[in-house]
Image (tube, rainbow over all chains, first blue to last red; front, side):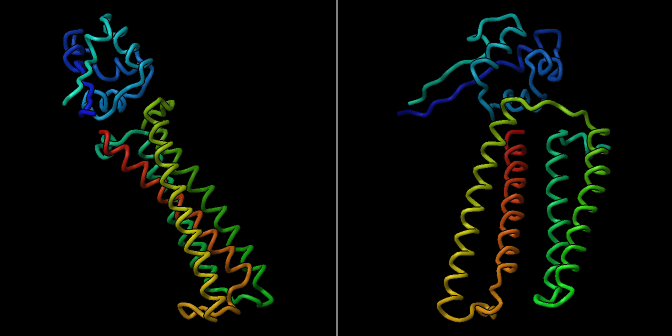
Length: 72
Length: 156
């Protein structure tokens, strides 16, 4: 099995959404700001439920926020 | 204040727990190891130390945790906090298993050889073993707190 990783566009989407702060996104997704920081930094992969909440906060489909890469 | 802005409420609380662990541990074991087991005053002195520990823990909790929650905003646990808790509980459990195994080896060796590390079988009283187990609880709790701090810093 190759190396698997998820990437995300949370930081870019925040800036596209009138420079939404991490705290605002955290409040919308019902998590702490530390969790948003960890997700943006690619150090924490959120649960499916949280991933959907973040996508809903931006009003975009899930795959616009998170991408799955199956490296060989 | 700038120092606190780099730490979340959760991390500061873990630091608080860790420091309380160390303070209480130092106070308790420093007092207990100066007592003479078997003496008439042993039970009374031990009770005095335990009351001291309780008073320190209560005062410290009110002051330190109160201040932390005033300076930083308390937040409800989310999924990442729970994952970090699970990982840290696992580390604490592993540490406790290791310490208990070491204590068992120590007791068995003392029993078979008469003395280990200048502690003879006559000193291996139930109260001494209870203190070793208490140290194990404190040590595993410290490992758990350190593991939580490490995991929080790792994802930041």
